[in-house]
Image 1 (cartoon, rainbow, N blue to C red):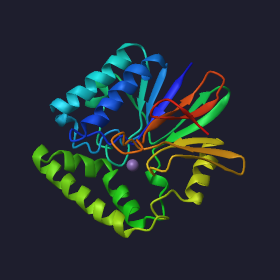
Image 2 (cartoon, protein in one colour):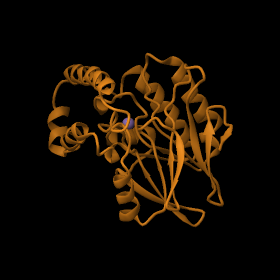
Image 3 (spheres, helix red, strand yellow):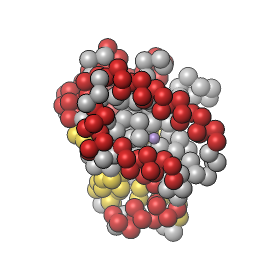
Image 4 (cartoon, rainbow, N blue to C red):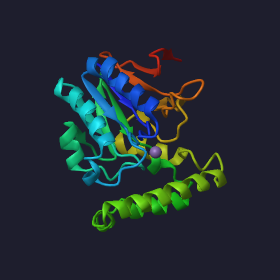
Length: 247
Ligand code: MN
């Protein structure tokens, strides 16, 4: 049993080299696995499942469909960019939508999976925004607007987010130790895998291991990206974009 996990690709039609790297990962790596977990922000943004017919989305959906059709179990946890993905997308891809915190068992250990944005509790403004947009009523109202209008609003938010990031300190853009301790306590786990922060690492605190997935920027030099693998025996390894095992 091989389990692969990725997050924070931020796929968008304006970055063809990124799409190519993702498609290569699916063909060369994911097809050889038994399970693939997408832990959020696969897309730079998702305006609603009625945008599925866009050629770029069709390309990504078809690629994920090839993987699920081959018998790989594909699962999805939403990120802060693509939380509007719904059952239409899931059905088209043949993947399963999971709640925001999910515990798996592998090699006799329990591992908690999540995106990581909900644990950035020092960012009070973001936490308020998140509380609002994760409400079903808010989402229903937003999705009732014309697609073009939704895209316009999202474009505005992305601009504001870019400006905001320049103002926010390095610390509040990361998860807080207390929020991480809460997840471990609530799930009774001692191993966690998440993304969101774009700070790939393995942190070991009080005997608990926290793996942070990388964001993907294969266009950068050196290229950024990669995945985490869980082998049959429960061994967890971090991999660079070229497959090299990281310490
Ligand atoms: Mn994120």
